[in-house]
Image 1 (cartoon, rainbow, N blue to C red):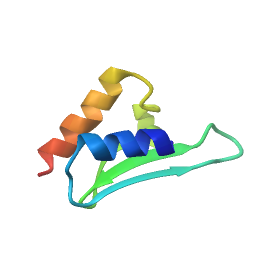
Image 2 (image 1 turned 90 degrees about the horizontal axis):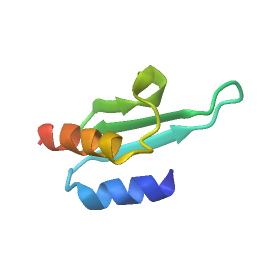
Image 3 (image 1 turned 180 degrees about the vertical axis):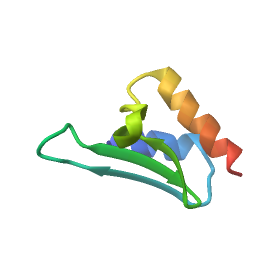
Length: 67
């Protein structure tokens, strides 16, 4: 997750970007991206882990839309 977070922060110049992750015993964990208080990606809510360029692009686009 740290590698993804660093890459995302380099790709976006969002002023208040928060990337969080939480391991959980019954699932593979939670992963969320919040910009200026707005949730733009949530693995917990069905967006999945951003393991493809398509998912990364979707997150970057959502971040840019909050500016």
